[in-house]
Amino acid sequence: MLRDLSVTLGSNDVLSDLNYVFPGSTVTVVLGPNGAGKTTLLRTLIGVIRPGKGEAFVMDHPVGSSVAKSKIGYLAEVPGLYERLSAMDNILFHARMRGLQGEGFKEEANGLLKKYGLGGFEKTAVHKFSKGMKQRLALARTTFGKPPILLLDEPTSGLDPDGSELVIRSIRDAAREGASVIMTTHNAYLARRVSDAVFLLKGGRVASSGAFDDVLRPFDSVRVKLLVPAQTSKIRDALAKFNLKLDDTREVGEFLVTVSGKADIPSMIKAMIDGGLQPVTVEPGEISYEGGGK
Amino acid sequence: MLDQALAIAIKDIKEYFASRTLILTVFILPIMMALAVPSLVSLFLGTVPSSLAIGDTRFMPPVLSQAVAALGPRSGIYWYLFTVVTLPLFLLMPTASVIVLASDSFAGEKERKTAEGLVAEPVSLQTIFVGKTLAPVSLAVLSTWLSATIYWALVSTYSTQAGVELLPNAAWFSALALVVPCLSLASVAVISWISSLSKGFKEAQQMAGVLLIPLVAIVLGTATGNFASTLAFNLELSGAYLVAFVIGVYLWARLIEPRRLVE
Image (tube, rainbow over all chains, first blue to last red):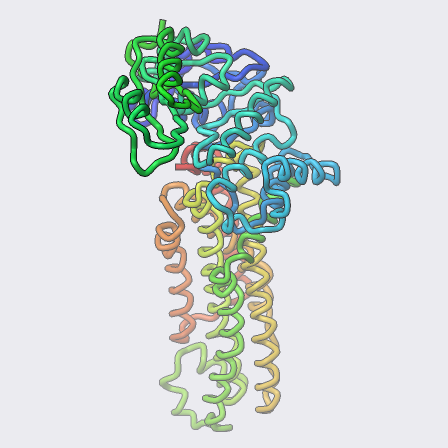
């Protein structure tokens, strides 16, 4: 819960008079342009940054207190793993800091490593991992012990589509099991898929909050991934209707199509199918923060 | 709190042992020094005459001339070189080790971006400090004691061969048992401050070089024969370092913002 929370770093007022109660058992996505204060908000909730004014509580405990921290699993923007240590050592160190020790927890750590596709790498030093593997390990560490609150700063950063899918599923699973997830992302598609609520920050203030579609208008543009079996004049003609040109070298094309509103999307997809194109995925385009917020 | 501090210390020690550079600096170099110094000095001492004219001691530094007068030329020179001149080296060793290790523990975590996760753990800054003190101090003290043991094993062998009986005296025991741990603690306190205000461990290491200045004064004092460490001096020095450590820790825990450990 945020009550008149303000944070000043140096001479900059990064967060100003935030008031918000994050609902339980839901995924809240904190959105906003660069410099809006998203990471600062998470860092304040975890106690890395002390509030300048106002208060913030984690399950009725003041932020920064050991009790409040013990309720939170935190994933920073940079995974922050101990690269000279093994994957298992990283998780067990985190566990020990939370007073979680014993064979049962080691089994849980093994289970999490397997869940995040890192089975067989328990004893491997983390510096040998790829970026995606590190991010998955960091997520495994964050969710260890099933903390009731998860703070995730750009959790899909550096992940391939399969890795991102795994993370999305894990976030939803965690919320289903009762955790409150508060996360930041620049990915509108991810935000829309995963969020129960969004919290829009602009210039350190709450611009609006609520359901994704109520807060933002992400469908001014749509990214369409097409499966193009062969180059035919029919397909070129179909693309031309949308001012698009087929990339000669690609079998799967990815195009940004601007529509006037989400009501136009079904007719656009129908036109594409009629034209011989096979849309594989349709995703929201970049979020326009201007005009967003109701 | 103790269990978490121990977990931090064990984690840091595991990280040290995963770095060849750190282990080379902290263990291999002191051990090589402990082997090389007595061997080189004993080569030089092979030329020392068994008797000296009174006039020969006139230009000797005070500590050496008193030793020669009391113990005779050979024993006096052996005592002077092996117990007086070399003792400050065993104060420089832990200081250098602590500079390297504590910089890695404090500033290194900041540079490797792991500090944020550590600060986010449900532990106080004091617990983090204790853990990050235990790791470098224990290894620095252990390395110094190991080197001193090797050093004295060699010194005893060489001096016995020369017909001189030499054993570590109260100044040595007090230096190893008290000054080395207290000096290491005080060094960690200084480095924790420097690391909190610097951006990376190399910068922290360079700034921590100031810790060597008072020790260089002791090295110069003993090397010029104007000063010999005693039990009383070591007790006072240990006390001063301990007070510096306590003040440093107290102020660090009260004044340092958690953000300082991260950014």
